[in-house]
Length: 317
Ligand SMILES: [Zn+2]
Image 1 (spheres, helix red, strand yellow):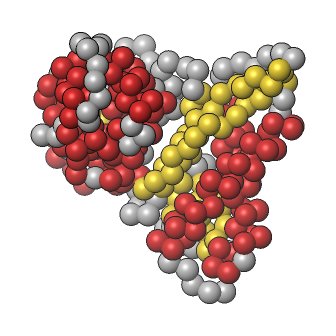
Image 2 (tube, protein in one colour):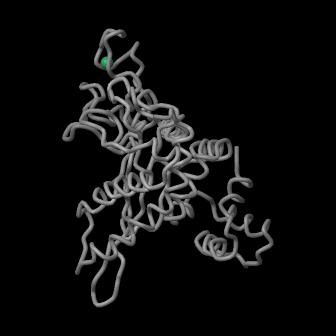
Image 3 (cartoon, protein in one colour):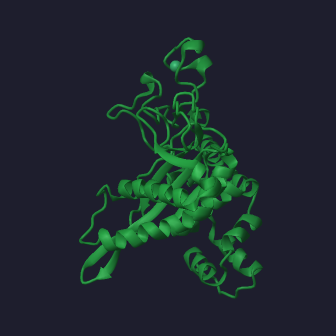
């Protein structure tokens, strides 16, 4: 057994990911074609599971260092869905012994306005090399009224930069995080299990594990925190300024924002003001007369493949 470093295992999975998506699509287009196809069908979870099986097959067949890694399902009550293990190593999930990193997997249907995927893992539950995987898919017509669940795109990147950006934007929206020294449940600081739990602007808990005294009236928790799309929303200048500073400062945050905005165009259109969209066109030498924000966005998508890099460059605080 050759020892493999977490960072090298991450690189291997990143390199294999495009091929794995292609293989899943080959398989599902043959096997999962069906009449109809509904949202909330559980198909997203099935695609996440397929990703694990196809990645494992690829790692095994690849040989070399790749064969030293294997993916495993996390057992109950552990944060994250999957772990990348050193193959053959003894695994102790509580201490992470034998693990190279963990993966939180989410799937979003492209046809749905508000994706229901939530990324709520806290920084304290996350290690440096842990990854977030997001699959974007939809039922795609095959003809003759048959369709299949096609994965259109994916994001695979380190979790921590996204968690930090999510948390900054949560604060910018008036939310906060429990401090064990002043827990709303009145816990003794050394016994408090709520440290770092998110509360929203109304001081209601956003995860089931938050303080009991912050439970909303009719549900266990508020469940807005960490929405894969929602976490990026900005509805005032102060929040927009935080968003732009975060995007400017971190390549992973920029990649995640660009990924979500690519597949949810109205989020991107709404983030910038009409005058800002027009100024982007102008600075890139695209002639357009008093276009709307949506028209400007469409022009950029058509004519400037790396327009999101320009958005990052042009707007920051
Ligand atoms: Zn507490």
